[in-house]
Length: 82
Image 1 (cartoon, helix red, strand yellow):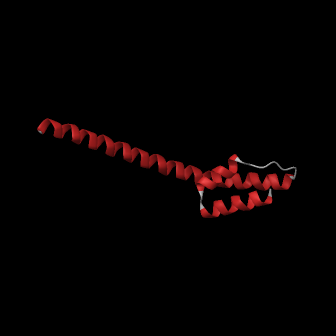
Image 2 (cartoon, rainbow, N blue to C red; image 1 turned 120 degrees about the horizontal axis):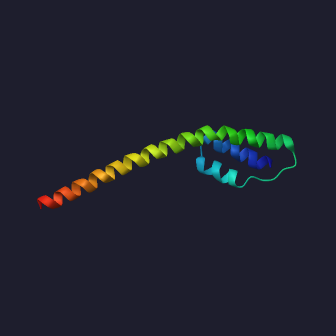
Image 3 (tube, rainbow, N blue to C red; image 1 turned 45 degrees about the horizontal axis):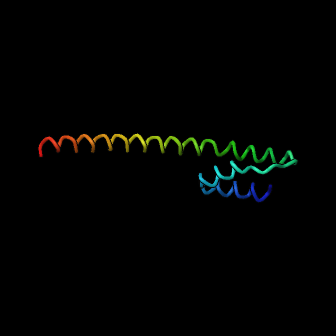
């Protein structure tokens, strides 16, 4: 479990969201309650970072949708003039 905790700490410090998600999806089992408490604390610490990224991705997707709609509209208008 300690290598997993170390890898999660590194991923958090590096803000490597893909690694964080992968590590959380592959949470090892442990009988040591202190290790599990530390794992929970680390996972809880990642949530604000992941939510921030989620918000950023959502904003980017909205911008892309608006740009796509604009380009599509311009393309359709240019067909009428051709």
